[in-house]
Image 1 (tube, rainbow, N blue to C red):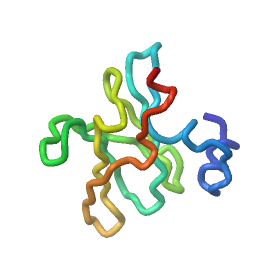
Image 2: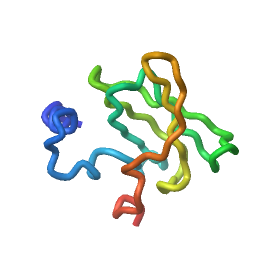
Image 3: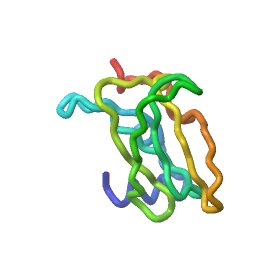
Image 4: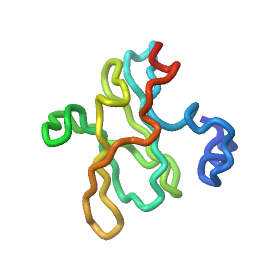
Amino acid sequence: MAEEEIQQIIESRHQAPHAVLGPHYSKQDHRTVIRVFLPQAKEVFAAQGGEGRRTLKHELVKIHPSGLFEGSLPGLINGSGYWLIVTDEQGAEHTLRDPYAIKSSAFT
């Protein structure tokens, strides 16, 4: 991902944030890459399975100090196939849906 594209996401001026954020399937790696922008997050995990039944946790790595995180899950994972587990700077843990996890052309 280009630095200019990262800056556009951070500054909320990207023309097509869905092209960067959310789940994107990599046919080459057979993995779903997930990117989220969470400025208040200290750490982020993507958890597969339904809420309360999360079985697999995958760390998303902070790729920009402003709060852009990225990680991947094996296989094709649609937006309803994972939750975000977010720990904020105060240490509180929150479970939420990825707002960019919608069915898109990334999964066709």
